[in-house]
Amino acid sequence: MIGLIANGQAVAATDPVRPPNMVLIMADDLGWGDVAYNGNPVVLTPHLDAMARESLRLDRFYAASPVCSPTRGSCLTGRHPSRYGMDWASSYPLPLAEATLPESLKPAGYRSGHFGKWHLGTMTADMTDGQRGRLGNIQEYSPPWNHGFDVCFSAEVNGPTYNPSVWGRDDQPGNPFIMNRAVEWGETTEKPGVKKSAATFWTGPGVRDTSHLAGDSSEVIMDRAIDFIEAESTARTPFLAVIWFFSPHTPVSAGDTDRAPYANQPMEAQHWYGCITAMDRQIGRLRTRLHELNIADNTIIWFCSDNGPSWTHTYNSAGPFRGKKGSLHEGGIRVPALLEWPARFRQPKVIDAPVGTVDFYPTLLACAGVRPVVRPGPLDGRDVLPLLDGSVRERSASLMFQSPSESIREWQKSWDPATRQQALIGDRFKLMSEDGGKSYALYDLIDDKSETTDVAAKHPEKFQAMRRELESWIGSCARSRAGADYGDAH
Image (cartoon, one colour):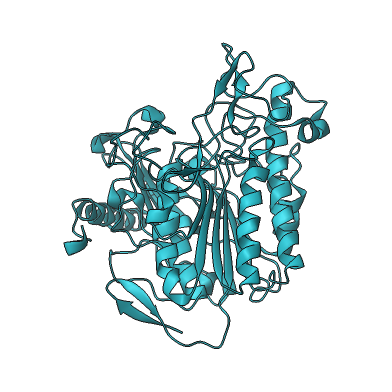
């Protein structure tokens, strides 16, 4: 067991059972329909398909936000990002007062590593880097080593999915997001028409890693993650590895080997599907290595995407769902997700109840026998182990969302509450407003998963109860945003 609580941190106590290792894998802009196991007829994802057959398939899994930074904050804190002002992509920083998963696991003996895209703050205030890193910008400086991570190979923002040291695209009108030609391994910024990447990988304060960055970005990231896992396995230390891939976020590019299975597709489609297949291969590589190290049985792997498919191209898919990235309709927030922990979940199963990225924090702490820290609160996530075990069939609390209007896209940091999107999702019904609560629609997600018909008039009592619950939660978020949760720590 792990006892509670000293100065806002969990305190370790004696437990004869070895706690599980944890690996959180997140794809970037992968839609619900962008994997073969969800019915995509083109893409090859054999390792994710195998995982879907052999583990827990979470068919109603929700990113906390329809864009990346806020969802990533929810993964580490168990709190909706609107509580701490992280409303949109690059709405930095993740506040130091927020208790994070690696910080809360540390008293239980865990070592934590972050690998890949960070997007919760800048990595330096001493130079121009990434999207917002610049000399003197300490307001947005919030690197992973300030949030409990012991080991890092982290970039502030995403980079190309192939040769991540350069932009993986030609600078040509009409082709801004997906490569339209073959790309050489190790292509450099000196090549005409190729732009330098904004992504730089950092391993600690003032320390950058510029070695071995050629080829598939998922492999580059997984190389470092596996090094960390091997070291902690040798030391017999429980670990948390957070692996946040660049793929398949634009700029999209793939190497010749991964394009080859799609030779009958247009060149841009070859790059798109190829980068997903490349990422899938690294997930298979990880699973194989865990078995070789004899730690697979007691290692949790939780895979998901940070939001729905991008609006920048049409090769991607939200499956049967309405909307894409930026929208609180299902296509923007319902994402592919899988979970395996062979020591606990011996039989494959499909989980049809709602689960979300806000649940990572309380659920994984429960897996480790750690109670969440007392402050800041409240938590929006829940320990969903009873759902995963099958001891209950419905979620114990609603999932709630708010986000700027999708029309602002990523180009604006501020937003008008009068035009925000709001949603509440229960076991069957979803309440949604696209105009800051002036009007609402109620959808039956069991009979109408594509959200085509407003059934509020058929369920007036349910509609009013859900509206009251959502409006109460929005008020709670406003109080959190004003600093009510932090006390003296703010």
